[in-house]
Amino acid sequence: MTRTRRGYIANRRRTKICSLASHFGGARSRLTRSMIQQKIRALASAARDRDGQKRNFRRLWVTRINAVIRENRISIKYNRLINNLYKRKLLLNRKILAQMAILNRNCIFTISKNILNPV
Image (cartoon, rainbow, N blue to C red; front, side, top):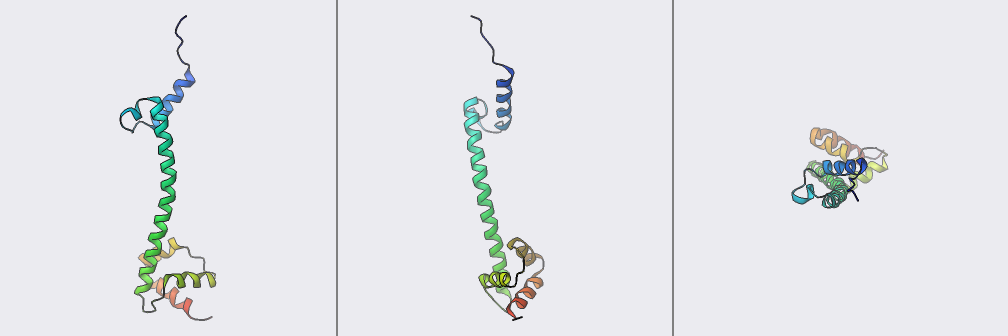
């Protein structure tokens, strides 16, 4: 019986996996089974770390906002600022507040003063 070579589709599949795993080291970039396993692991790690990155950025924004509003003479706490923002229905998320805290501190001070004053 003559030897059969695998078809075009199998080679194309392996080539695609190899292009994804080309930067891995050792057998993980050469052997098909190792490439597949490492690719699955890498994709799982990427998904997990994207969630972690969202958490880290939120922590960074909260820290920046808190640091700037405590410098102010009013010296309110972060949780009171956010609570009063929601009460006043001001739609400013933490990312925007953190950018304003870095670039324009007077804007944050004005917002915090106006929030504390009764309507």
